[in-house]
Structures are given as structure tokens and as C-alpha cells.
Length: 62
Image (cartoon, rainbow, N blue to C red; front, side, top):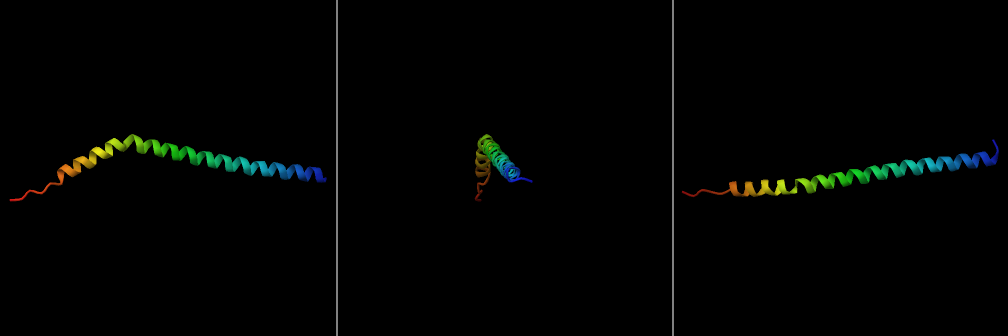
């Protein structure tokens, strides 16, 4: 193998790991955005459940 072929192979390997890391980072960002969207979507429901629980937790004194 000539030196030029070795250098070209090293550059291809470097790009491969760059693509792999870029894909992983992109997937993590997408997952985080979906989770945040779900939290925002269910926030009013969670607040309503907490209010109902607070209303149900009254003490009756005789």
C-alpha cells in the first residue's frame, strides 16, 4: 500500500466516526425535544389532578 492510500483510508475512517457521532447527537436531541413536548402537553392534566387531590384531602372534624 502506498502512503497516499493509507492517508486516504485514515481520512475515510475519521469521517465515518464523525458521521456516527453526528447521528447519535442528532438522535439524542430529537428524543429530548419529544420528551419536552410530552411534558408540556400533559402539564395541564397534571395540574388538574393535583388540584383534585388537594380538594379531596380535606379533614372532617366532628
